[in-house]
Amino acid sequence: MEQPVIEMRGITKVFPGVRANDDINLTLRKGEIHALLGENGAGKSTLMNILFGLYQPDAGAILKEGQPMRINGPNDATRLGIGMVHQHFMLVHNFTVLENIILGDETTRYGMLRMADARKKVVALSQRYGLEVNPDAEISDVTVGMQQRVEILKMLYRDNSILIFDEPTAVLTPQEIDELMKIMRGLADEGKSILFITHKLDEIMRAANRVTVLRKGRCIGTVEVAGATKEDLSEMMVGRKVSLEVEKPPVQLGGEILRVEHLSVKSPGSGKNVVNDVSFTVRAGEIVCVAGVDGNGQSELVYALTGMMPPAAGHVTLAGKEVTHESIRRHTVDGMAHIPEDRQKYGLVLDYNLAYNLVLQSYFKPRFSHAGFLKYDAIYEYADTLIGRFDIRSGQGAATLVRSMSGGNQQKAILAREIDSDPKLLIAVQPTRGLDVGAIEYIHGQLVAQRSAGKGVLLVSLELDEVMNVSDRILVLFEGEIVADVDPRAVTFQELGLYMAGAKRMTPEEMAERGHGA
Image (cartoon, rainbow, N blue to C red; front, side, top):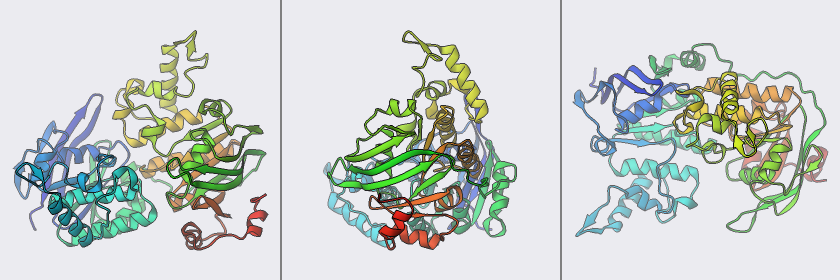
């Protein structure tokens, strides 16, 4: 058998309160796509950060083509041909695409940057691999999908032959995911070896040759993808059978919880409407989903509904009370809960501990403060209760810095905080982004439980499976306008895709029949 390009033998890594990697073995062959699968917090990113030199193992060895290697940092990894695209991109937002790609590996002559040579190489690489970019665009002005292309080009610019992708599709649209899968297969066909961390079983079945499953820091096994099913892999990952279908009791509609009338929101940059004359309602006991390709006004719509951005026109009414221009705190007090699309930017204070993050929306209430002083015992007791109820896993319990927690457990913390506020309306934006099947099953169950408790749920999602399986009604947003209001039981994936792409839209009469345009 051909010598593996990478072997990781007996890798162990311990952090305070948690054994992240426990005697893990992994081999990577030349020209293969090897998936790394596991629950949030299973140790996948830790293992790859060790291979990239960001962490040092407490025990174990790394071999490249049979030779033991010590990787003391990313520069060592780069010299060995190892590159990594991190889950949260490592880009300088006020630098251009070209500057980000060459950063740390600049071509110079007599101390001067040779940007023309770098530009030629970047353009050639982008054309060769189908990674079209604008070298002169600033990172802050390009889409998330384009930022990922920049990260891949950074690796190719350095001639890396071993490529690590950590949750590469967590922030991409379905179209961008398809494109990335093609790019990865093309790279593997050229002889590059890819390690691919993902929670999405469909992607593993489509792209990977082999998959190694981790659970609670230990290696459960490595299998050939061709001989496995999604059900097999999910059971290996979670340790129990996981339902890949969302079970919902019949809808029991109640009164109107949210009314949005002729809402428009302007872009702070261009001054143009990114949400244009949008009207809809959400009633108690239903999950209404806003679907669409990313960048069609979903974010701005949510910002206006939750008080994060002032609308240019229109009205937002929550349980009979107008909240259009109320503060974020008033929205919360009046019964609106919000799971934001970017949990780290908008949902958590990363350098606060878990206990403080769990009372971010309620620390001012008499239960947790008196005369301007926090009641620490009450806060920590409350945090312990939520940690138990929502199965939030953290190395040091309520005292754990949220920054050190896995993405899935950060998301559970936000979910616990928002749901425990007993809201009338729960707005959940991309609530399962980057999560494993066990966590997805759990969060979907919580959304359905809110629906069953007579709450209104507004779900915003890019995941078509989630849109079709979880929602009771689907609103399709295209270029800031609602172009369809459909029943998930009566629409196909293909038809939904046509609405999302703007190739089809309901007539004004059809929309009026569904309660729009009044």
